[in-house]
Length: 220
Image (cartoon, rainbow, N blue to C red; front, side, top):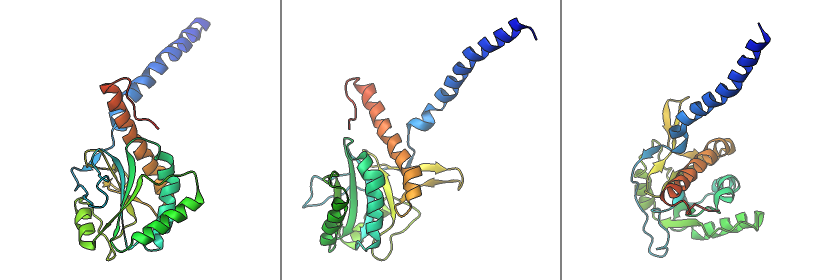
């Protein structure tokens, strides 16, 4: 093999490989730029004493915690450390947790426990919605997930809801099914899946705003 041929081969690799790499990733933009919708138009929430809390026009992590048993403290800590503290600074991002209408004091104590762990985290975007078990069950049914609430109106799974009231998730190629929610008991699932999916949804809205107005972005 001549020196000239080797030189031309090296130049070809240096110029062609980056172009092929760019084309490969560019072809996958649509796969990474949008988080799949797994259920359209879930029910809105209407709370008389919290009229400012709505799902529409917000990016919401939604949960159903029923009686707020002690198990929920572990889930709350996982969510706070891995999701809430990380994304709380983003515009229009919130947590909404349905609880039994007799569990409001427990919810306030839970926030105090979480606050004691990190005084730098504000919880103004973490809302507890006290409702009856029937109302909680009815709202959860609007998600049309394969899982049910337990007899206390709770589930360890939390859900990502977009600004148009759509339930977002992902395709799970290993199981051949869609991911409808994220197990807040699992640090691995929150870190490996939910963090990435929240990032994708925030990037989706950021891109939409940039396309609409170059000077308007989702900010931290």
